[in-house]
Image: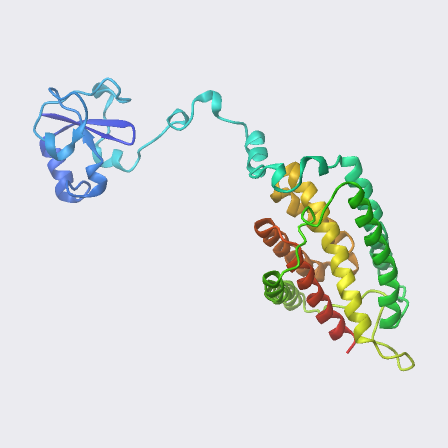
Length: 345
């Protein structure tokens, strides 16, 4: 007596009642098992597939929709049970199966451009390139110059912490003010910048700062252990104040950390990330944002840049999910404050 087993879109068989009984006895099938309950057989006299336990003992022939004809079935049920196969057409019509390029593009566009910026604020690539060049050009050039000096064996110019903070405040403050003025003319608001000072965001910032410090320090410690070196975080162009220098002003350091945090987060997150995400999705935006921020942190050296990259990745993923810049500004301020205070002793 022939029985055909139908599972996952395929028909196997024919099998005798004795064979089916053996498979049930061995545990390959169990009429009370949920997986086996989903196995159905088609028997002559029935219009459709029925549960296996209901039709054992009936003479069968395969249904019209079966993909496997009885005369072609030479594989035992035991072996076929572990090798069910499906074809592309079981999932999508052939015309809907995309190329890998299309699949990769669609994968990045998991959000709408309007989720990041209002349509009128989405700039052309020319405008984005000009804005980022003008706002980050000085920092990138200064960092690159420090790398070249170190590579050529030149000793860096030593500045006091007060001079360094005042110098950076003047440049970054002016650039930030000009950028905000331009964005205001373009119609940007605080909502578009994703900056909304609130108590909840302020509380989140402390956790972000601690997490980012741990994330940034972990790769540095691991690489130092593997390479046998010591790479501590430091400020380029600046060492501990020498004996004749004035003591560092904590108020000046605090103001510098706030301005520096606003400078980086507004440029990289409020402007660049939102523009990139509106054009190519948040995943690509995270990658471009990391490259942008590392470009003016090359002075740190390759080991510390790995730590910075992990911190930037952490900030990027967090911003992708939360879309809030205020906690990032405060977290960056705490991060810089910790680094500077520890760098100056």
